[in-house]
Length: 376
Length: 248
Figure (cartoon, one colour):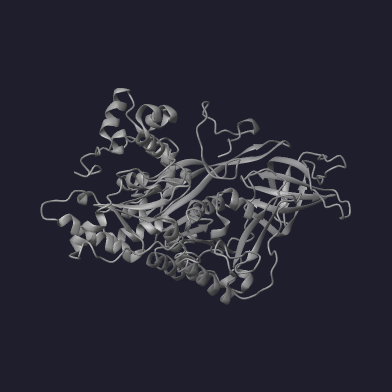
């Protein structure tokens, strides 16, 4: 079952109502301040409120941003956490952590069964040597249900990270108590704002800010100056990597959808990377390969034979007529896959490491050599 | 007494998180909001285990030693967490290499050839994204360096400067990472293939509290991502085709 990802604000000093009702009043303020940031913060019980993570995360540009904005809004006394489901999110808030999606069970495992707030169940489990949620989760579900009943089975499902809500976690009277604390008529107050999914859908503030800065650079330097990388795998024999201008309809808008920016020419401006070589891939793929010379110890040009073998050992490399560098290691040659319609050519790639520690990807055809890419 | 009151729940925290998950949870304490995540193998390089917003980090190294890999890797975790990033002045960037490093390509723009307008472009981007990587063409002028460092601080953007030598960024950074000696694994004299570059990385700078730290990293490892380098039992660095690093 897909659990809702929640942000929980947990206020350590406000969990219990004191004699003067101060805690409820302060909690009202926390809920109000958080509510200014996001319209559907809702109280769970005294000292704990929650909001859905997904919408605000898209709007503010990530869960960390949501958390940091909330911290600013509600103050440092509140602990904030994010996790799948309310039960885990409350514990995440107590630990001040963001628990990654789908890792709920692992996070819950080390907590005590006492966190379930079911004292009789906890005592029985502890007599059986089951003290942690992880140990509880490891028990077979059918056994738990048969032995301890439906409520324990529900708790078991929570411990396994399969559901997020647990009876008793929410205080149904909290809205009324807060109305009292606000000095409102407890029975006839305004309804809390209804959940509006999709309120935060679409482009977020962070996305707009980023897109604006990209457009500014494009105005200065041209549409082709700001590029987005794309890797397309699949059935194509040569895996293609390209760079397309930001804002081009070829998807050059990152993850935001919708074209932004001037309508420049659409197409690949980067060199396609014929990725048959295993990783790691080179960090610089030269659009214009550099002319090179590769010779053996005798000074004769190295060549790849018709059988795809090097005719001699590589000894020295010179790029663009520059100084000779000693070759300490090399690998290949790997024939370059050609498309069936191209004229048959004998091209091969060789990885070359020179004495200074630099590694390059070279391409050779007949006795000619070019540097195609650099590993830096 | 409400069942879930603070009294009912033991106040001691869980003793520890399972290994692995501990790397993947993110803290929500207020100071954490001013931090951006970095890939786990690079966390030891940073005083807080993360890139601090508003700071300038220089990454330097001889060409071919992996400084570009290290600088790009600093974008990986942040982009995956949803931060927008930009890389200015990296000519002909290897898109597949970026993806192998773990960069979310949907969150990163490249400005490979800004020409003489590199500093203005970097300045514009500092106002729009969370991490800017800039590679100045040669030695940067003091005024340009100061301006960008100040803009980064003001906008709470992390600035990463890639240079051949740390002297090419006259302002100095809050943190300086420099790549020293490197050794490739996996290639021999005519056999194997490049399977990883083991590099010595040195950390220094104002925010390292006067410490100078050195550590060994794979920049990158066989998978194309960065990884911590473990000492082999025989004290070797894991060189040669049989001792290539496992995929990270």
